[in-house]
Length: 306
Ligand code: GLU
Image 1 (cartoon, protein in one colour):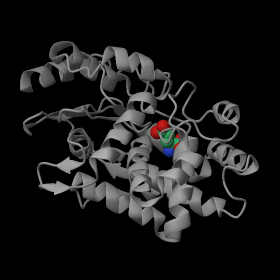
Image 2 (tube, helix red, strand yellow):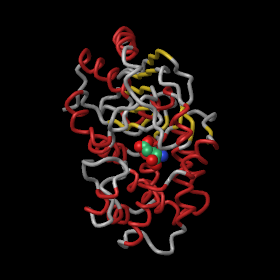
Image 3 (cartoon, helix red, strand yellow):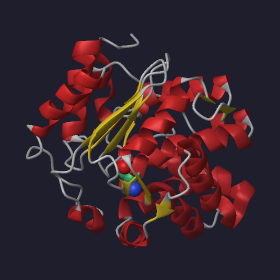
């Protein structure tokens, strides 16, 4: 495993000039696309890492997994099903058209509209504590108390969120979100969740919990139920890699979630979790180098769940 991971890392380094850092959130344009990291837990709980594993970056859309876990724990299932679909992602992660085609119901919880709707459900229950709940959950799952919000990224997201507000307004106008919902407050909780700083070790650790059906083998604690783990891995497989999910399923074959900050978190069903980081993105919004590293590992280890 150690050698496979190191070979994958070397392979990834060949592509650091291929991806483009996200620029639609101005603060993300400052990220360094030569920073590369990979971390993994295997089935027997051994941990491996290579590269800039302490480098912090914004979790971005990987936070949608944690928001969804929290929703499944805290909100009645029927209410979630009514508000958010569990369909595969076909169009870009922030597509207004996709939402419109669904009559204002987000396709799944791992695209922007779906995560905004999930945040709105949490807001109904937790009000202004919503972001703190998500942050606590990220810290708890990663067992990392040093995870904090990056205020600069948050402010940058906030001031450039025209498309996200379009999604928000469309959901209200189609009746999928209540007119009484305080849009700015829910949006702030969503932007903050995206702007939390993690490293690749944190993502590997969260992936490892998902890959063990919600049980954290390292701390010996059950973090969430097996049923929640199964549901979350399912939407990751279908919607976690933006409109590249089908190709990713064939090439790599693991439930995964990526974020425009450059992180990718994967979780098999059998206790294998690999996380990667490199902020240069491909046309879908996935880390270019991250995909290359995962591809290299998949070829050697044949860990596809399909
Ligand atoms: N904060 C980003 C947004 O709302 C998240 C996108 C992503 O990582 O896919 O656009």
